[in-house]
Image (cartoon, rainbow, N blue to C red):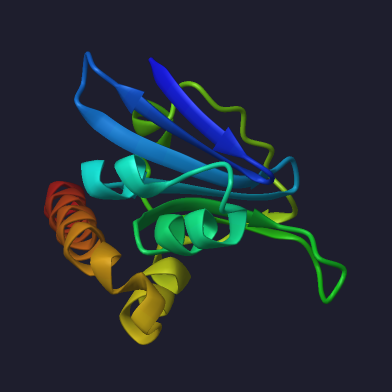
Length: 138
Protein backbone atom coordinates (compact mmCIF):
# COMPACT_ATOMS: atom_id res chain seq x y z
CA UNK A 1 0.00 0.00 0.00
CA UNK A 2 1.14 3.52 -0.77
CA UNK A 3 0.31 6.44 1.53
CA UNK A 4 0.27 10.21 1.47
CA UNK A 5 -0.45 12.20 4.60
CA UNK A 6 -0.71 15.67 5.99
CA UNK A 7 -2.01 17.40 9.07
CA UNK A 8 -5.32 15.68 9.90
CA UNK A 9 -5.59 13.55 6.74
CA UNK A 10 -4.14 10.44 5.13
CA UNK A 11 -4.70 8.83 1.73
CA UNK A 12 -3.96 5.32 0.58
CA UNK A 13 -3.55 3.62 -2.79
CA UNK A 14 -3.84 -0.16 -2.68
CA UNK A 15 -2.28 -1.59 -5.86
CA UNK A 16 -3.81 -5.03 -5.16
CA UNK A 17 -7.38 -3.73 -5.29
CA UNK A 18 -6.79 -0.56 -7.32
CA UNK A 19 -8.68 1.44 -4.68
CA UNK A 20 -7.87 4.96 -3.57
CA UNK A 21 -9.17 5.81 -0.11
CA UNK A 22 -8.70 8.53 2.48
CA UNK A 23 -9.37 9.45 6.07
CA UNK A 24 -9.79 12.77 7.78
CA UNK A 25 -9.39 13.04 11.52
CA UNK A 26 -9.24 9.96 13.68
CA UNK A 27 -10.53 8.44 16.89
CA UNK A 28 -13.98 9.78 17.73
CA UNK A 29 -14.02 12.39 14.94
CA UNK A 30 -13.21 10.30 11.91
CA UNK A 31 -14.29 10.24 8.27
CA UNK A 32 -13.43 7.68 5.58
CA UNK A 33 -13.74 8.30 1.84
CA UNK A 34 -13.29 6.49 -1.43
CA UNK A 35 -11.41 8.90 -3.68
CA UNK A 36 -10.31 8.95 -7.30
CA UNK A 37 -6.82 8.55 -8.67
CA UNK A 38 -6.96 12.23 -9.65
CA UNK A 39 -7.68 13.31 -6.08
CA UNK A 40 -4.89 11.07 -4.79
CA UNK A 41 -2.44 12.61 -7.21
CA UNK A 42 -3.45 16.16 -6.21
CA UNK A 43 -3.29 15.85 -2.42
CA UNK A 44 -0.13 17.35 -1.00
CA UNK A 45 1.19 17.76 2.53
CA UNK A 46 2.14 21.36 1.75
CA UNK A 47 -1.55 22.21 1.19
CA UNK A 48 -3.49 20.53 4.01
CA UNK A 49 -6.68 22.59 3.64
CA UNK A 50 -6.76 22.15 -0.14
CA UNK A 51 -6.09 18.43 0.27
CA UNK A 52 -8.95 18.07 2.77
CA UNK A 53 -11.30 19.91 0.40
CA UNK A 54 -10.35 17.50 -2.38
CA UNK A 55 -10.87 14.47 -0.13
CA UNK A 56 -14.32 15.77 0.88
CA UNK A 57 -15.38 15.45 -2.79
CA UNK A 58 -14.88 11.67 -2.61
CA UNK A 59 -17.56 9.14 -1.73
CA UNK A 60 -18.16 9.23 2.02
CA UNK A 61 -17.92 5.72 3.51
CA UNK A 62 -18.00 6.19 7.27
CA UNK A 63 -18.07 8.87 9.94
CA UNK A 64 -18.03 9.03 13.67
CA UNK A 65 -18.65 12.34 15.41
CA UNK A 66 -18.18 13.45 18.98
CA UNK A 67 -17.99 17.24 18.79
CA UNK A 68 -19.71 18.11 22.07
CA UNK A 69 -22.51 19.85 20.15
CA UNK A 70 -24.78 16.92 20.86
CA UNK A 71 -24.56 13.25 21.66
CA UNK A 72 -21.85 11.31 19.81
CA UNK A 73 -22.93 9.25 16.81
CA UNK A 74 -21.61 7.03 14.03
CA UNK A 75 -22.89 6.80 10.46
CA UNK A 76 -21.95 3.85 8.27
CA UNK A 77 -22.64 5.04 4.75
CA UNK A 78 -21.14 1.96 3.07
CA UNK A 79 -21.14 -1.27 5.07
CA UNK A 80 -18.05 -2.37 3.12
CA UNK A 81 -15.91 0.45 4.53
CA UNK A 82 -13.58 -2.03 6.27
CA UNK A 83 -12.88 -3.73 2.94
CA UNK A 84 -12.13 -0.37 1.33
CA UNK A 85 -9.98 0.89 4.22
CA UNK A 86 -8.36 -2.10 6.00
CA UNK A 87 -5.40 0.14 6.79
CA UNK A 88 -7.24 2.37 9.24
CA UNK A 89 -8.72 1.90 12.69
CA UNK A 90 -12.27 3.06 13.38
CA UNK A 91 -13.77 3.80 16.77
CA UNK A 92 -17.56 3.72 17.07
CA UNK A 93 -18.79 6.77 18.95
CA UNK A 94 -22.27 6.79 20.50
CA UNK A 95 -25.25 5.37 18.65
CA UNK A 96 -24.89 3.96 15.15
CA UNK A 97 -27.52 5.37 12.81
CA UNK A 98 -29.84 2.70 11.48
CA UNK A 99 -30.19 2.05 7.75
CA UNK A 100 -33.45 3.98 7.35
CA UNK A 101 -32.04 7.17 8.90
CA UNK A 102 -28.82 6.84 6.91
CA UNK A 103 -30.80 6.33 3.68
CA UNK A 104 -32.87 9.42 4.43
CA UNK A 105 -29.78 11.54 5.13
CA UNK A 106 -28.11 10.39 1.91
CA UNK A 107 -31.23 11.31 -0.07
CA UNK A 108 -31.54 14.70 1.62
CA UNK A 109 -27.98 16.08 1.76
CA UNK A 110 -26.33 17.15 -1.48
CA UNK A 111 -22.93 16.34 0.05
CA UNK A 112 -23.91 12.66 0.07
CA UNK A 113 -25.20 12.49 -3.52
CA UNK A 114 -22.43 10.15 -4.63
CA UNK A 115 -23.68 7.59 -2.06
CA UNK A 116 -27.24 7.45 -3.37
CA UNK A 117 -26.80 4.70 -5.96
CA UNK A 118 -25.05 2.40 -3.47
CA UNK A 119 -27.54 3.10 -0.65
CA UNK A 120 -30.55 2.58 -2.97
CA UNK A 121 -29.17 -0.80 -4.10
CA UNK A 122 -28.59 -1.89 -0.49
CA UNK A 123 -32.10 -0.74 0.48
CA UNK A 124 -33.60 -2.76 -2.40
CA UNK A 125 -31.67 -5.83 -1.18
CA UNK A 126 -32.98 -5.35 2.38
CA UNK A 127 -36.56 -4.96 1.12
CA UNK A 128 -36.33 -8.12 -1.01
CA UNK A 129 -34.90 -10.06 1.91
CA UNK A 130 -37.68 -8.83 4.23
CA UNK A 131 -40.30 -9.79 1.63
CA UNK A 132 -38.82 -13.32 1.28
CA UNK A 133 -38.75 -13.72 5.06
CA UNK A 134 -42.36 -12.54 5.33
CA UNK A 135 -43.45 -15.07 2.68
CA UNK A 136 -41.51 -17.84 4.44
CA UNK A 137 -43.28 -17.02 7.72
CA UNK A 138 -46.75 -17.39 6.17
